[in-house]
Image 1 (cartoon, rainbow, N blue to C red):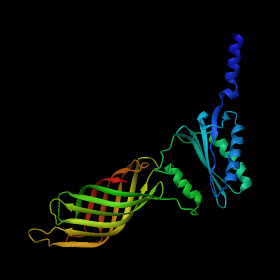
Image 2 (cartoon, one colour; image 1 turned 45 degrees about the vertical axis):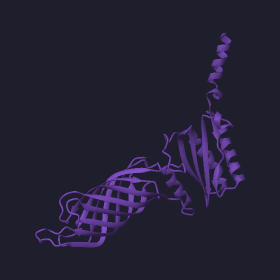
Image 3 (spheres, rainbow, N blue to C red; image 1 turned 90 degrees about the vertical axis):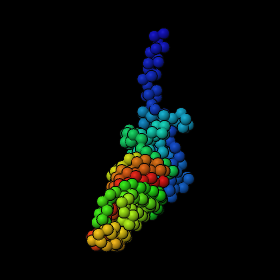
Image 4 (cartoon, rainbow, N blue to C red; image 1 turned 30 degrees about the horizontal axis):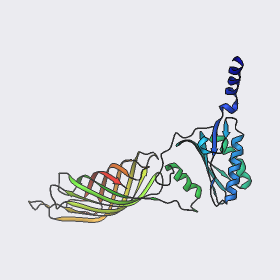
Length: 301
């Protein structure tokens, strides 16, 4: 009995027993032939086998971890590698090789770093292409504008209370907003947007504007604060006073808007945002240059 327990103890302490099973997925590539992809996969397997704390397996269902690799070839090679544990991203990284002879060295470095580090606790997935916000930006940089990265398109619909400046109405109104946005990066949106705000005190006091805008997000997380600005055309109608001290008047011209807020569920196909936006028209009525401030909630899909 003592011999059996001793044997089990030795077996349990052996490197093979302690090694974690790992599967190497087929290499994905851009401008890489199927034969080159197979060769790169075999090089990665060989590097994994040289690691004493990991044991290579050929079936994904038997693996505790698995490695995904993508190689993009232009003037140089760009390597993107991720180690997964189920649906959790354990570690990720990017490397560059100057030529094919340097590629093998960089693969060895990549495998060693990816297996012996933890750089991610599970990044949220971005839209239908299953790439995180950070990975989308990194892929765009690695492609060096030789190949375009698709921008995500969204329709924006929002509304909320509106407050007016130099329009002879003191009570809050209601504002409506519609637009079309392109998410070009993990930190930037570009879009077209129109606003309409009308006073609930005087229906002849209202503002209409349309503009091109950009938003900047402070993080690539699922929830992120943002600031933005837009430039376009605005038109405002001023309420005329019952005493005729203020005549029925209007102003129209270039308009500037500034906005800020928080956007939620960024990595989903449907987003929600809350924020505030001020629009100023660079034209004078009898009261001066009009403006409107909108406190909004918005749905983006």
